[in-house]
Every structure is written in C-alpha cells, then in structure tokens.
Amino acid sequence: MRWQQLKLHEHQSRQLLSDSGIPVPAALLAADPAAAARAAAELGGPVVIKAQVLSGGRGKAGGVKLASDPDGAAAAAAEILGLEIGGNLVENVMVAEAVDIAAEYYLAALPDRESGQLMVMASAAGGIEIETVAAQDPEAIRTVDCGVDSGLAPHQARRLAFQLDIPLPLLGDFIRIATATVDCLVSNDASLVEINPLVQSGDRLLAIDAKITIDDSALFRQPQLREMRNPEEETATEAEARNSGISYVKLDGTIGCMVNGAGLAMALLDVIVSEGGEPANFLDVGGGADAGQVAKAMNLILADPEVEVVLVNIFGGITRCDDVAHGIVQALDGLSRRVPLEIRLVGTNQAEGLKILREAGLNAHRDMLSAVRAAVALAG
Image (cartoon, rainbow, N blue to C red; front, side, top):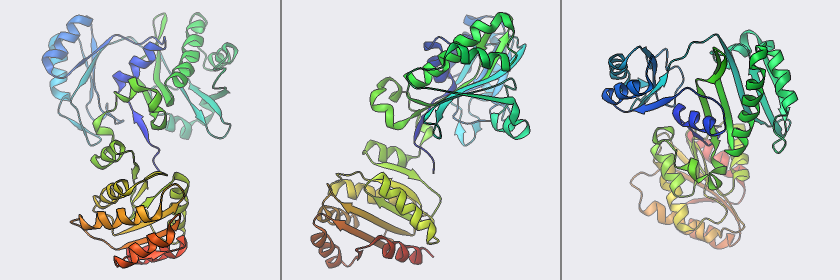
C-alpha cells in the first residue's frame, strides 16, 4: 500500500537542504521562457534547465537541458514547458547554475523500520538510480545506523567518506553534509532526504539534485511544509478526503472499504485479500466519525468507477453504530450511483444501528468474515 506522504519538487527540496547548511548551486524558478532568460542572465554563465514535476526520468523525457546563455535558456524552457512527464504537465522549470563535475556520489537519510533508528545510505556510484546500483553492485552501497536524537556522529560520517574514497581535502565538507542530511531529515519530519548526485566540483561538494518526502502524519507540526503541497501529487478524491479529515488511499481493486481505525482497516484489507478479493481503497473515517463524516466517506468511495461493491466495517467504540447507520442511509439517499453494500456493524448501540440498516433494506452483518465473504462474492 502506498504510504501517505508529501512529495516536494526539486527546487523545494533544495531549499530545505540549503536551510540545513548543505551547499547547492544557485537556482531560480521560471514559468515561461522570458523568465528563464532573466534567470539565466542573473545567474550568469552556463545554466541547466530542469522540469519541475513529481516524476523520475526527467532527463530521458527531454525535461533537462543545458544552455550557455539567456537566449539558450529561453529556447530550452520553451521546449520543456508544456511537456507531459510521468503523467504530469510541466508548468515550471528550475534554472540552475551549471557546474563542472569531477565525481558523483549518492547520499540519503531515511528511517530504518527494522532497527527503529535512522539509516544513512551512501555510494560512490551517484548519478543513477540507487535501485540500479543495488541490483548491479550491492556492495557499492554503504549504510550506517544512527539515532533520532543523537544524529550521525562525525566518526560515522568520516568512515563513510573513507569508504566512498572522498578526496582528503573534501573530508570535512563531506562530514558536514552527511551530518546535515540527517539533521534535515529529523528537523523536517521527512521520510526520505536523498541527494543524487552529490558532486565534486573543483574544490567543493554540491548537492545538484534532491528528493525529499515528508510524512503526512507529521504535517500538523510542520505548517511551513504543509503550504508546499503540490496539487499534482494526489487525485481530486484524495485531496477532498484530506480536506475532510479522512485518510484515503486509492488502490487497484474493486471492493470499496469504509472503516473506522487504521488497524481495523489493515485487518480488513488482509482478510479481503485472503478471501480472494481486491480492495479498491484504504479509507479510515476515524474513531469519532459522525453521520456527516460517514456520508462524505461513502461519496468518496463511490467516486471511484472501479468500485463494484462497498464493504463497511465499523467497530463502535467512540463511534455510535446508530450514527454510522444513519450516515450510510443518508448517503444512499443522495447518491446518483448505487452499488451493492455489505455492512459489518458491532459495538456501541449495535442493535439500534443494525435495526436502522435492515429497515432500510441493507445487508448487515455482526462478524467481519461473513461480511467480507459476501462482498468478495458480489465483486466477482
């Protein structure tokens, strides 16, 4: 299942790196060729023009070009703007100072869920996807664990530098960049801070491309990052769900799922798959969902044309089962599209909830397995 996270454009990621003290080449954002020309003139010298989309493979798709002067920058921007890369329309380009590259390295920090700590990954094989390096030469990837509070110790960064054959005059710079990469991860509640490549250019190290993702669950304490959310990173349904306080992730199946509680949702998905079905979504209305929230969730599920049946699994603790039942009936009254509905309802005011559903002619179950099996059978 796709983890919910805020994805940043390259220029946004570079800003966070710079804020953490990691050197990046000067760059400006441009939305049209004239602005690209002005940016190139301000930066002076050769520049690189890069599409700003939340997709990989920009270079192969024609989204990265070099220009030696402002006229060339305008021409390159004209070719890139309007391209569709990975299903995303290019609406902005970044005009960045071009640098000579003597060596390329890979450097990243991320949580390590197995150890419960943070992990730093580094490789002398920078400039290509780390998955390719892992497949072709896994020994080329070096890793080290560190604590959230302690960060990466200088001696750990120094050992990485030796393993990557960082030139001795740049040893101090690498140590500062590696430790700052971890600090950037922690201070921004990021799920990934990736620099690829980190380049040696003359007598300095520079981060010339970056990818940072932020854990959505941490955005309540990162309001400055919440403002960076890019519309193209989520579907209209996902955006509507987020604005309504509902956790929703689109999946590839045909059984729409409405559940209160992430643990219950995960359990339901497991049971659906074990019974031969395919979930169409992960949707959690939350522990205290009222009738309006339930109605909103039902509309979000049915907005997906792939949904052939809706399966509701509610454990009424804080949530009252009769409120949920009222919400479901209320939602059905206003829907233009109807699909079969199977409902498992148990907990607070269970009897009242089941009575409301059955009087409305709906299929209500007391246990999850029977509801799942009925939904899987209806989904074919």
